Structure formats: C-alpha cells, structure tokens
Length: 227
Image (cartoon, rainbow, N blue to C red; front, side, top):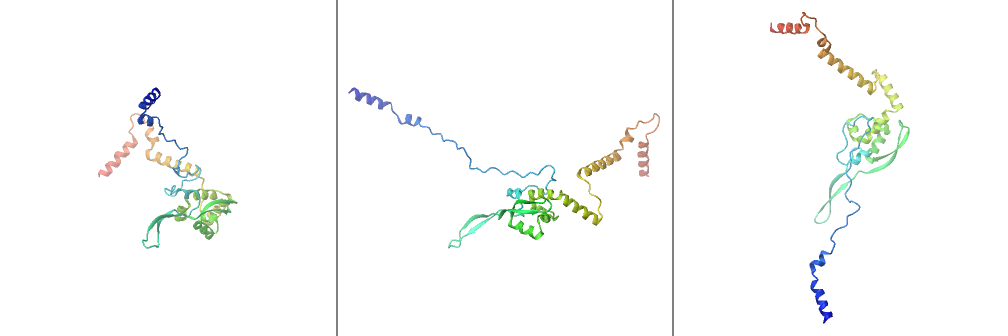
C-alpha cells in the first residue's frame, strides 16, 4: 500500500502543461543566406572621363563586358496542347569569353562578349575600330566596360600618332591637354569677371574734390536716353 500510495502521489503532481513548458521551441539560425547580394553600379577610375549614358539600371552585368546592347528578355512559352497554356520564361544573351586581339594595346584581351557584338567587331575589322566609332548608338552599346577600354586604346602612342596625322590632314590646330584646357578656361572666365565688374576702377582711390568718372558716365548715358 505504501508503494502504491507513493506512485499515486507522484502521478498527482504531473501535468501536461509542465511537460510542454520544458520543451524548447527555438529554431536554430542558418549560417548562410539564400538571398542574392545586391548588384552595385560599375565605377570608372578617376582618370577616365565620365560615361555620358551612365551605368545600366537593369541587367547590370552587361557593364562587365561587350554585350552590344543585348539584355535579358522575358516572355511566354506557349504549349501546343489543347489548352494552349502559357508559362513565363526568359531569354538570356549568348555570352562567351573570347580572346580578342587589340593592335593599339599590342596584346590579346580576354573579354566577355556576345555573339552579336563579336559579329560587329569582325565586320568593323577589329576591336580598335569597333571601340573608336563615334556613332551615338555605338557609344551607347559600349557600356561602362567598353567606354573604359576605349579610353585606354585612345591613350596609346599608336593612336595618338594616328590622331595627329588626321589633324594635320584637315588642318586642325594642335590638341591641348586636359590640364592646359582647364587653365585656359579659368583665365578666360577670370578675364570676363574683371571686365564686367571692373574691380580696379571701383577700388581705385578718388582724389578729394574730383567727381567720380564712372558716376559721371552713368549720368551722361541716362541723360542721352531721356532725350
């Protein structure tokens, strides 16, 4: 009886709530994330002029190679069955990593290029001619990567000599460097400011008892206008 009473007393203190209270419902944290990292905009070095069209806002990986303006496209896959159902799908550009020769740089470049851009390069007669085209559509399809590569090609000695020969043929003046152009522009702006404000004449001390020549000129002009 004593053993039975002890067992009854033990079972009397047991409850379902206390049993669930001791359970741990915490979920372990994952050490990785399935969310893709946000793509950052491509940045140009400081010595390269800014790209007129800026970085791409959609399909930003096109700024890492010569994509020729190709982008990812979206549409529907229509089945040929009785219901003619539609399934969303996408078409990505045909991108390959190719070795292309640059005569100006004198080396082979491994570039991500689409089949569309590769055909255009072959049609233009080489990578340098493709990059140096001055058409707006070509500059737009170059992207950030092509714009930086274009700048590198233009700064090579071979291209500088070619540009000098072309300027000599058409009789164009010698091209100034960017620093010289900035200096001349600042001098031109300062000269216009000095001419408009005439600070030397305004700050020149006037002798006592003499009229201000600038004020006299203004009164004379106003009198002529009144007549």
